[in-house]
Amino acid sequence: MKPFLIKLALNNVILEDEFKLAVQEFKTIEIIPELDQQKADLTVFELESESDLDRIQSYIANTENTEVFLLSGNSDPQILIKAIRMGVNEFLPLPLKPDMIKDAILRFVERQKKKKRRAFKTSGQVISVVGSKGGVGTTTIAVNLAVTIAQAEEELSVALLDMNTLFGEIPMLLNISPKYHWGDIMKNMDRLDDFFLSNILSEHSSGVHVLPSPRYLNNSPVPASSAMDVLLDLMAVRYDYIIVDLGQSLNETALKILQRSELVQIVTIQSLPCLSNTNRLIKSFMDFSSVPKETIDIVLNRYLKKGMVTLGNAQEGVGKKISWIIPNDYGTTMSAINSGQPLSQVAPRSKIVESFNDYVEKLLPRDKKEKKKWKWF
Ligand SMILES: Nc1ncnc2c1ncn2[C@@H]1O[C@H](COP(=O)(O)OP(=O)(O)O)[C@@H](O)[C@H]1O
Ligand SMILES: [Mg+2]
Image: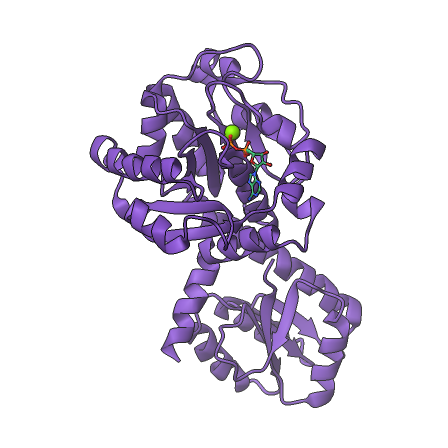
């Protein structure tokens, strides 16, 4: 998780040191210089005289999304009321007591986390992972993408939906035993709400919430596309990311999911049949499901530099730039599958885990925004 940024707008160096000392154990915050161009999530001022209030008020008015703490030796109720009206979040009397600072910081962190949860909430994104053939790594990618997102930002809620119509392997890959299945959802469509949903999905230790394949327990039928619509509507409110392992199912329900996806990943490997399937899949998604071309990402899995088919050949073959290259690592993927653990747990320092981390870093909106911002300066 990225730390929350704090600026100390203090003239008094001793006060500054006291504050830094009191908060040094917090890993979730970082103190940055007052003139740093990044926006602070919290700015700390000292109120030396009442006239400082004007300066602070104009700072609050001109700075979006920052909290303000005010340190003051003067606890005159009139000043306090004024400060609160201005939007000061915490008022800390001087001399500073380390515990008081820590408590205030704890409350600040809680408020920030809540704010972040709300900010992400309205935009649940569906990412579908489709295989250009069986065995190309679709399930491995869906599972580990979900886990990587959940672990990248503690605040993000992630659901993983298994839509494989033949076998559902996700519970095995994550070593969980879901109690519920699609049949339970279909039978209870009329009482499907947030609460019901949170009970029916199984939580993995990474924080990912799993809905196993319709075929996982009692061979329930594939859900109708209308039911899928209702379910995705609800899930988009509750989850920030909904990762769907579509396997190779291309039934009506799968097409519905594709249409609703913010991102469709087609997984291929360096083999001519797969590349040619990928090419055909791109066309049919665009033509029959009206999936926009820019929504489709090509993922080249099991990449070998010395492969017969080069990266250039592969791109030419699919007629689209490859967005994500995942190195070949049979050992790590196999031991992950066989031990029911995510790749990051089996081999945290491997190239394949690095590849997932890099991809997710690019995917998450906070990073995108920050990169954009840097271009300005
Ligand atoms: N990047 C990779 N390098 C090496 N082997 C991989 C890689 N990704 C997946 N595999 C292997 O490919 C096989 C199929 O993976 P799986 O995720 O079940 O594919 P699918 O869901 O497309 O059938 C597994 O044995 C897995 O270990
Ligand atoms: Mg699979």
